[in-house]
Structures are given as structure tokens and as C-alpha cells.
Length: 375
Ligand code: GMT
Image 1 (spheres, rainbow, N blue to C red):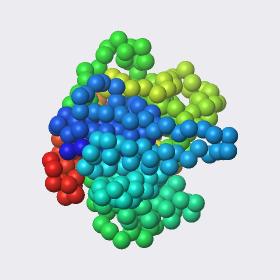
Image 2: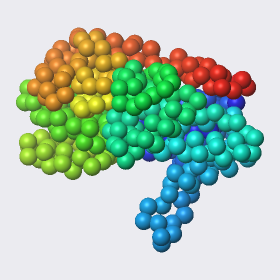
Image 3: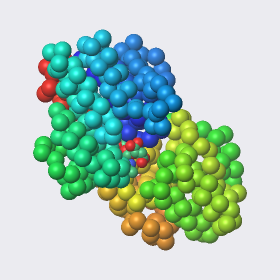
């Protein structure tokens, strides 16, 4: 099957998921065409079944805002026609679903039918999509999609609650390639971060407000009062410098490292003891699932879809948003009890296997097959 995948190419969860999906489909002999403005971050190796088409957005003095959506729709038309695509799968509704709709209408004039599937990822619905600047277009393009999927039940319910959706939203949970996260910890690496055998706490995100990274810092300060530990911050974004200032203010900066955006997450996760995710909302929390796959228990909030992956008292713990005392206490419960920590590590790994890539890819293939009988 020839599939066009549209996504954001950046470190965000939706782009990561779309790229991993494309790679897995290519491994199953589908021809996959990524269409976006930059090479997706996890698309580094060569694969004969993968193609990348860059969306170029020419600038012109008249354009204060270069029209990306128009450029994307035009590139889609070009890729559909020249590569005989069977189907488009767009990740993140804005502006991908409306661009796909536009492309579909354009090729229809030439007698070509191309179905498109829209996968909702989170902020395209819960933050940006709800804004009335975008809502009518988002609603229309969701309803015009041949199928809509959401990455969690919570996101599906949020979408129904806010938008007038006339068709079924199918839940296909995000996935992880569990085998990729079975790395042995590199002792030398662990020693660099925690030279005296301190416990290692980890947070990975895009440092947006919704992640509440200041709460991560507060939790670290509380845990560190009780036991020697280190905190690794992976990723970058608007709240990073504020988090760094707070670490200085709380006098914990020597035990905190900001390592920026990283691609080799497996190695970092392999040496980590606990993953912290303090978000105000997560439709799913792919970073938490990847941590679990690596056997790292998760202390998270109970917001959004996090309750669908993190099992309270088994794979980690869940607290209300902002309850830094509670989350610090849960962290200490695990970090001060080796037996419990090991039990939770095993549980996390086992639970992540439910979301293994090999279980989820066939669900997508089955969905595609409903619209195009050419697998
Ligand atoms: O907020 C992010 O982490 C980025 C955002 C994205 O679209 O790239 O992530 C959303 O999609 C991910 C993949 O489906 C989910 O795992 C994240 O939970 C979701 N983020 C939010 O809902 C805030």
C-alpha cells in the first residue's frame, strides 16, 4: 500500500509517533511518503520503502505569515498524483486535516479518490483546536475525514465534548517499540551523572507550560532533602530557563542537569530510576510509555489519558495536578525501598508491552484496509 504521512517533524510526541508508525509500515513492505517541512527527527536511517517530500514555503514581501497550509495542500496534490498514493494519514489536526481535505478535493476534480485519516494527538484539540480562531475549520475537517482516530479514550471524550463530531472517533492507543528500550545501563554513563550512586530522576518534555516543569523542580527539591539524588531534564522549550532559575533559587542546581534535546533516549532511560511527568494535561503521555518500556516507573499526574497507561500502585503512582508533596512522597516510597522499586520496574516493563508496536500496527493496517483494499 502507498501511504502518505503528514506530521510535525519536531521532537513532539505526535511527530515521533507518526515517524515510528511510518517506519514500522515500511518494514512491513508498505511504501511510505512523509510530507512535511523538515526531515522528521526520528527518520535518520535509510529505508528503501521510505520517501520524504519537503514542503517548501516560499517567502514573499507581502506575506507577514507565509501560507504553510496552501503549500502543504499543493505538495500533497503533487505527491498523490506522482506516487499514486492510496491513502493519506495526517497526524495532528491543525492544519494537516484541512490541507488534506483541500488536496482530496483538488485530485477529485481529476477523477482520483484519496481517503484521508486524521489522528488527533492532544493539543490540536484541547488547547489550540478549541480556540475559536481555529475551531470551525478543525470541526469541519475532522468531519470530512474518512476516519478519525484519537490516541486515548480521554482525548476521544474531550473531542466529543467540545466539537460537533458527526462520526465515530476510534481510539488507537499510542505504541512503543519495547525491544528498542531493553538496553543495558552503561555504567560509565551512570557514573558521570551520579558519581556516588545517587538515584536518578528523569523528566523529558518540550518544556511547554502544560508540562508544569516547575513542579518537577519542586519534587526534586523535596526528594533531595531525604535522599541523595540527581535530576536529568531532557528536551527544551519556553519554560526551561525558568526551571533553571528555580533550581538555583532552591539551591539544587548542582544536582540537576539540563541536557537539551536528545535522540538516544534509550541510553538515558536505561540509567534512570524514576520518570516524573507533572503535566496539567496529557492526552496520552508517550514519553511516560517509553520510560515504562525501559523499566522506569512513572510518577505522574492523573490528568487526561495518563490514567490509561500508568497504573497507580503498580507501574508508578498518580497524583492530582500540582500535588508536589504527594508526588515527592510517592517518589520516596519507591526510591527508599529497593525491593519495591524493582517490582515497579518489572511491572512497568510488562505493562508497556500491551502497547507494543506489534500489537498496534495491525490495528492501523486494518483501518487503512477499510478504505483501500490494496494491502
Ligand atoms: O505536548 C506535547 O508533548 C507535544 C504533543 C504533540 O502533538 O507533539 O503531544 C501530544 O501528542 C502525544 C502523542 O500522541 C501525546 O503523547 C501527548 O500526551 C500529547 N500532549 C498533550 O496532550 C499535552
